[in-house]
Each structure stands twice: as structure tokens, then as C-alpha cells.
Length: 378
Image: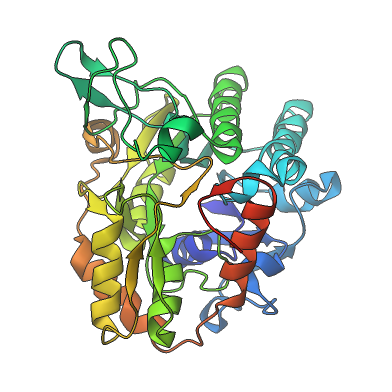
């Protein structure tokens, strides 16, 4: 098949391209090589340079879609700005890339009957759920509202039942959960997903929205301070800089390894299902931030001190783990890489790269100067 991957020079895109090329598909990558993600590198990995077609351009440029979409049967829309915290002050940028860029794609498809596109897969996010699913001893399954700044400043980090305010326990979040994003990034992904599924029906293009959890693995950007704590903690631990953990360290995430993400995405591309749907892509594991910090620090010889800071960032959630029932039924998806195995692979790869600290400190300063980071002094 002829397959276009937007944001194709990024972490997920390059790994997906390798799998598709290996499977015999013809792959086109569209990317603008954003410095925040790629630094000064504006080239594809060497093994892909002769294996794929590269279109250099920005999804916000209407003219670029004509060249990119021509003769494509499948579009995998990965292009996006991805920083939860950054989205709370770079509002226009996130709207333009995540929403306007996708709007231009559908504007073109709607105006050109006979375009040949048979399937679209969009990278959605667990961020659309906000706090996600919990169980309350009085009301069963509930979906708490985003936590308030006042609650977190008082040291109350766990969400409570939205009905009776009782303590509740996080459980795997299904796709039927309401969308209650706590960040603008999450809101843009919610609208982007809804746009994809809506036009999938209207234009008769079977479409899949993959709600990726926290994707990690060798090859992810170590320069981008907005892509996750694994890159941040590995940079700090390698240089012996103190690791300051937000909240109380008991917040947890669903870290899904890149190989599993690629398998789920390939299954979506080649699925015979002609309906449009959303599906979680996760690991079946819940991992606390404290466990991540300790594991990373241990790998690099425990050169850093770990501090529980109580600092919190607007837009963050408390816990997150995905219910994978639908992904199993629709895509035959079962995660195969456990966190400890995947983390070891990631850290062995990161050890060969130069650590990057400036971007992380700059991101913290930006958040605090805008009133989005609480409890830290510059």
C-alpha cells in the first residue's frame, strides 16, 4: 500500500516507517523537522533515506497537502505538538498544528472526490480523558473532574468522587469514559480525534483513533523537555543532578514501549474493519513516577539525589492506565514488552547520547513565569 505518515521523521513515525517498509509498503514521510524535537538535525536516519519518500513541509501549509496526499491509500496522522505544560501557554501554536493542520487535510479530501484515500489513522492521546476512571465505595465507577490548584496546594493530590467527595481508587480507563481533558494539549487531541472520526463517516473513509498512553523507547527525543519524564530523568541521572519529583511521587503512568505502539498502529493500517473507532494503546501496567526515578537513578549508579518536591504543574493528571479490551477485540493487540525490560533498552540507548539539561530548566522557568508551576522558586 501507499502510506503517508505526517510527523513521519519523529520517534513514532520513523519506527513505524521501518515496520511498514519491511512489510512491503511504500512509505512517504511528511515532516518540518521542528527544532524542539530534532534539534539541529534535519535529516532522516540513514537507514530510511533511500527507503522512503520524504516531503519537507508543515501541516499548517495548505499547499503541502497536495504533494503529500497524492496517490496515497492510507494516511497516518502523527504530526502534533505534544507538551502538556507547554500547551497551556503556547495556545495558538497548539491550535494551529494539532487542529488547523488536520482541518487542512480534511478540507482537501472533501473538495477532491476520487482522492484514493482508503483509511486514516490518527495519533490520539490518553490526555483526552483527564483524570480517567476511578471507583468510589459509594457510587461505583466514576470519572473525577480535574483537580483544583487549591487542593494540590494543600497537598491533596488524589481525585475524589465527583458525587460524594469520597476517596476513590484509579482503575483502567475504557474508551467509553467521558472526555474531560485537563490541559489544552488534551483538548486539541480530543477535537482532532473527533474530527477524524466525524469525517471518516462523512467521507466514507474508515478511520481509527489510537489513544496512545506514554510512549517511550530507544530513539525518542532527549532534547525535547516536553516529551516525558524518562528522557528528563535519564539526562539528570547521567550527570548527577538532583531529581526533583512533582507532587508526592505516587502519581502513576501507563508507559507503553515503542514496539508495541508500532504493532498496534500497523494493525490499524491493515485492519479489514470498515468501521471507524477509537482504541487505547497501553501496556497493562501502572508505574509510579517515584519508581521510574529510582530505577533510572539506579541504572546510572545512583549519582543523583531524589527529592519529593510537592511542586505541581497545571494540566497534569494524577494517575493513568488504559483498559485494553477494545484494542484486543479490534486489533488483536496485546502489549508484549514489560516496563522493566523496555526501560533497560531505553537507558542503554540513552547512555550513548549526550545529556541535555538546558531545555528542561528553560521549560520549568517558562512554566513558573506564567503561573503554571507551583511550589518552585526560580
